[in-house]
Amino acid sequence: MTYQTTHATSNTEVPHVRLNDGSPIPSERLFSKGDEVLITHNGEQYRLRRTRNGKLILTK
Image 1 (cartoon, one colour):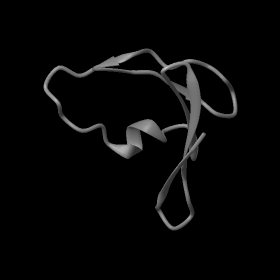
Image 2 (cartoon, rainbow, N blue to C red):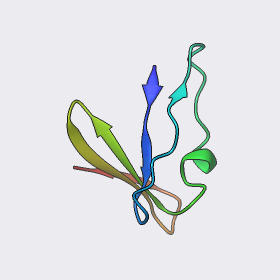
Image 3 (tube, one colour):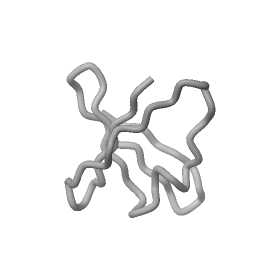
Image 4 (cartoon, rainbow, N blue to C red):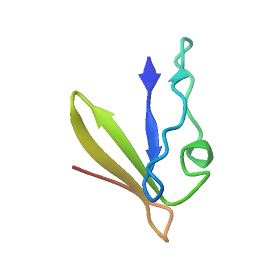
């Protein structure tokens, strides 16, 4: 499985992360540089946002 994340404010790409064992990715790793992560999936761009209350919101 391959994940590609882009920091929402700087548009700098983070290297691909390869997970072969199915282990979860800690949210602290995804949000290490801010409260938003851009995700590309099947040619579409999504925004994963962490709220002040610690909830996650995924929008297209």
